Amino acid sequence: MTEIRRRPGDGTGGLRTGAATFEDLREQAVALRREGLSLRQIRDRLGVHNNDILARLVKGEPPPEWTKRPRAKDELRAKARELRLQGMTYDQIQVELGCSKSSISLWVRDLPKPEPRYSVEEHRSRMTAGLERLQKTREEKRQTTKAAAEDELGAMTDRELFVTGVGIYWAEGQKSKPYARRERVIFVNSDPDMVQLFLAWLDLLGVEPERLQYRVMIHETADVQGAEQFWAGQVRVDHSRLQRTTLKKHNPKSLRKNVGEDYRGCLVVGVLDSADLYRRIEGWWSRMAVEARRRNA
Image (cartoon, rainbow, N blue to C red):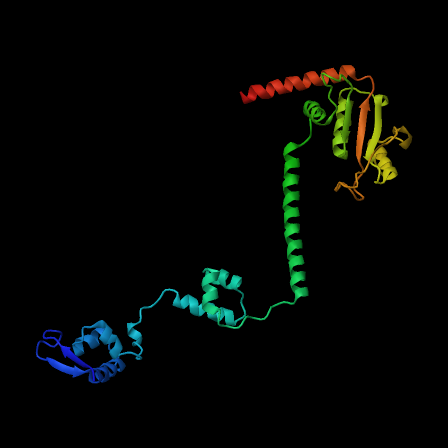
């Protein structure tokens, strides 16, 4: 039999001293616990100030509800479990409650995993539809921005066309090198609009159509005849006006992306007797470069 001695002044006012058995104290402690007293209140009633002994006296008896400290996440946890039982995924619960998925996993891991809301085919269909909507929205935004930019530019003046032509030639046209002087105007491009701009520029400069030569340059595995017909139509000349097409050899080891019906190679536009014109272009570009450096200084 365990005997516990009380100390004078331990909550009994010094009036209760002597010895009591553990079983007697436990019976009293359990009764007080069931009445809804806290450990502090039981300690004061029984005069037991040893925490270990006090814990042993009430072992197995749950604390009263009023002594439990409320936790901030208790409500979240209950809501997470409710949403999980409704069939929500971790991602959906996270969006709904704003808490981490690790916490959600801890709170609901004992609950059964919800059945998929959609079959594999339905899920794939919804993904495809969502992607199509996204692409449509992006395309609409792109077209809106493009249309607004077109309105900003408006009609192009002769001066603007002149300066633009100098720039695109120096970017895309053939340039003479100190080690290989070839002062001839030759422009190569795969973009029909760039070709049209270049031709409009030459017309502005007074270059006669009879001085122009055209040649298609394309991979040998492409639709050569179709490309020739396309470019002849773009520059409004008979197919017979085109020079012999330059065929580029195909390297089987290389992965080409310029394939398909839209691939028509490049058009080479050459100007006969153009040494003087080339030198003027070189001078115009030199002046533009000087102006650019002056602005950046």
